[in-house]
Length: 95
Image (cartoon, rainbow, N blue to C red; front, top):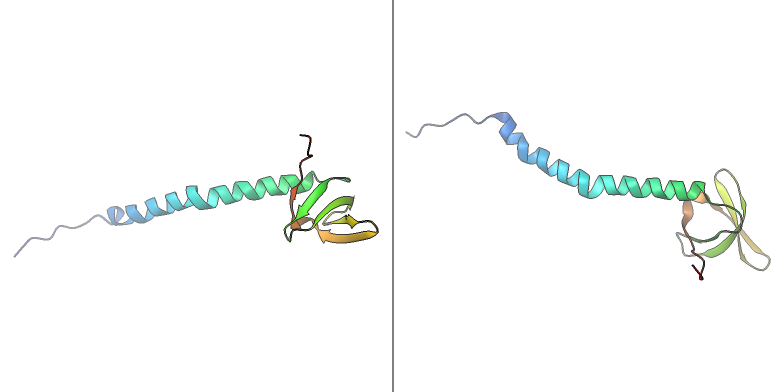
């Protein structure tokens, strides 16, 4: 009969731990950094910034509240949106 050797339980957990570490550095960490950058951008939003919402609406901010912002979409067209729905601030064309 062949003799069986005992396998250390830590050796069995090593591949699982390695997969978790790779998963963390490739998926979780970059997503958290992106969320921090987005939150920082939202804190810096101010009047007259041209923004694009996550639904694709382009507008100019005319008022900023704690959780909402009012956009001017067109002449005499205003919309109040959640600040979290602002995807990005448009850069000036000449920059």
